[in-house]
Amino acid sequence: MNHEAGLKPIPVSELASSFEGFLEFKRATGLKYVSEERTLKYFTRYCQEHYPGGNLPEDAIFDWINENDNRSLKTKSNHAGVMTAWAKYMFSLGYRQMRIPDIRCPKNTAFVPHIFTAQEMASIWNTVDRIKPQNINPNLHKCIPVLFRLLYSCGLRISEALGITSNDIDFGRNVITIRHAKLDKDRWVPMGRSISNVMRKYVDCQRDKITPDAPIFYYHPKKVLTPSSVYGRFRITLEDSGIPYEGPLRGPRLHDFRHTFAVNAMNRMSDAGYDLYVSLPILSAYLGHSGIGSTERYIRLTEDRLSTITDSMQLHLPEVFPEVADDEEIQL
Image (cartoon, rainbow, N blue to C red):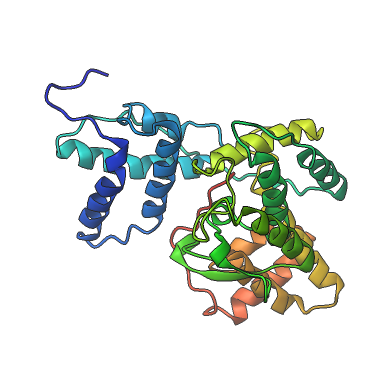
């Protein structure tokens, strides 16, 4: 791409301030720009990891959108739209043009969740527990076994897990506070005794390495850990565990730990005799969903059993969960 004379480069160090100006500009027109702000934060982390201390290359957005981190086409299309608007805003201020990918999102991009079996999970634990220490990433072998167990045990989104600090964990009540999650809401996530013990032991080992307000999951204390970095390790784990990767719309994905958690949780509640009309919205609240319509994507019950539950809930409790226009997830 040939730049016009006089156009300025975009320093990575000035991304945060440029995003603030862009958000202020958009919100002045009446737009909320909540999910868009999260997209900008994800892009900031990517740039801090790939271009520390320099200027933003003209292909930075293009490369980030096309990164093989298993985001869905819908998510990549949405991210491309946000970054296109920001790039146009920056160009109007005299900065260089950015290369933007043309992401065409077909109407039918439904993915098929992979629900991990007990045998597959045993293979994964065996693999991650044998990760060898690395000089370049001294905490990777400690971080990944705990992070994967947390995703599997609590059904967190990877972006939520990577934001957890030691200040967010109450071991007295075995509760994690997830701050500024999807839809910019905070929520409490209870932990079972087993994962709480694992987390406590891990956090205790980090106290002399990071501050209480720093994310507990990292490969190196001076590097920000991104979802794409974790996904790369996840793909290595699948291969070393003998679990085949079947493609972008079939996975397994890192996000399938969350699917597996939801399925196991609903089945346990059903087997324990809990009223399914009650357990479905409970699971929805635990996962941080805006309504049961989102939660049913994570449940693998028999078709007639699930339809009976959701149809009845939507009929009798229409005001419990208000509609949300954009309920996309970052598929990892």
